[in-house]
Length: 175
Image (cartoon, rainbow, N blue to C red; front, side, top):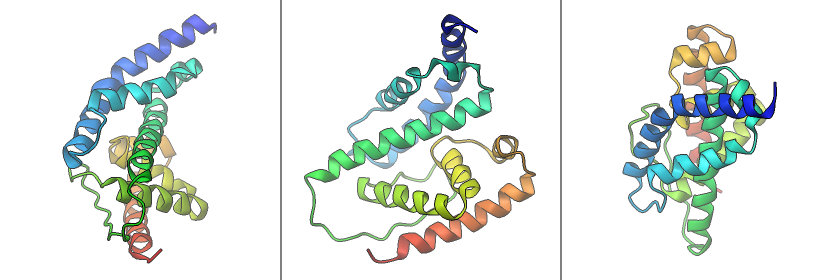
């Protein structure tokens, strides 16, 4: 496959995932009115990260959505780091982790804590960390995650409960 075919595939996949990513970005925006990125800007920033690798266009849609979720996570974390850089010195706030994707998004400090907790979870259980990232940042549903990971929906549900409990515990720990 040539670079043109890769780019065409990437454009096709992005077109399919765009509205879904925009919906998720709107939820993030609604939960954090202070967020300087609009939903469109958030999706576009994620696209800029993805467009540097046109070979992603040859991936199955579900794999592309997982990678797009990771790109959205990176954009949100980078924005949160920029916003908190000048606000150093505040106390650590209690963070909770809820499975409902339509819940308000975390404040920048909370998002950074979640990011660090996900990295810690990835060291202990990479599959659970990938599942949480795909669901929380990418909006993938249980059947999609099961397909992505090559496991049953029951396994995803078990892992989801375990990951939520682990993250909730981790996020309650003092710095």
